Image (cartoon, rainbow, N blue to C red; front, side, top):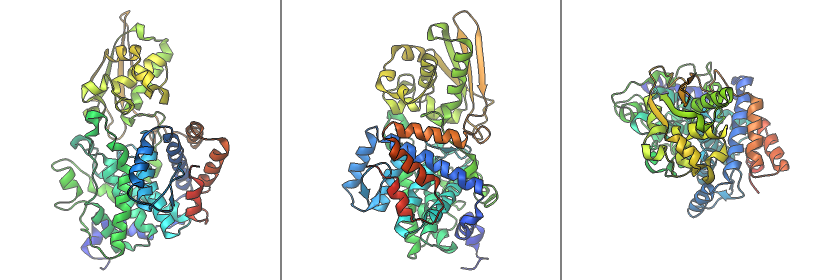
Length: 464
């Protein structure tokens, strides 16, 4: 295939040429440093997830299918590289506290890091190769999400599962030494694997927790098929039956976003780190009500009604179905409930992991206040560029307090600093492990980019 071939003029070709040529030295120092801190956040969350029950279920399910020697983040287990990627994705994303590329509406690290880690260890690569591939995976995942123009959620697809599979395929392919032609094929192949349904919103099922790890596994698989000569359609994004014309049929999309600014505009720098362990669509509301509570000394007894305005697309995620949002059945329902988060924050003056425990979910003060929360469409929302929140609190004395958070905290216009991310990492680790382990993991992550083996890095991030 020549460079003038039609495949190279398609979006998969532009991504493939960029990915095949990308070297560690091409990535600006500030991007590499931010990448290390995104990894720091993700691995800290993987450790924190082990305090809950869902990782053990995933581990048991995967261990029943395979055995291997690949280290798993935060756990002592070893698995086949693909199954390790699935479990690592579950660990990073399972609490829904991991990073999000805001305009792409995509959790980018949760798929890109597990794919890159397994592929780098398998290939005998260094941490320099690993970090390069991780950055590449984030760039591709974010751009595929951007191409969807905020529409994936509206039709019931989780963009992390869809976009993450493409980023994982290119990251894994890069580490496997694929040239541009085979990176085109890897994208075409993984297009037949990329999907993740939002039906879990109806009953609080755990399927969303699988999505990034499954995307990582699909990416690793697609890269291997491409490596050995399997073909994939080059028009996987813009073709007649490509991603955008099937998953988003009849909707406005932006396929050109996939190739825009490659190598000059680093989407990784626009990736938001979460200050709250809840769906990113609700963060602006949490900040708004906490600010109003602190400013006016509010207590639940002072509040007659709370009116929230949200864009209809994220509104479907955090306000429907009503029975699961106004009275969450479990902590996963609560993470995706605008009424619950608002009422819990107003009741307790904070929102952290404790507000997702059973004691909080059954707190009558929180649930009574939630019944005073109503929701309407927000005509001024910045979605999908940012996740806006507008709140009106009507007090029992007749006063009405208002607050608009047009750009959510953590957004690239209001980013958490690297120091704040390091503080979050320390808090995540403190839930489950000691300072010696925390320091070992921190040192390994902040040293990413040296020429030590990626396997040594994976071993340093294991649990014991």
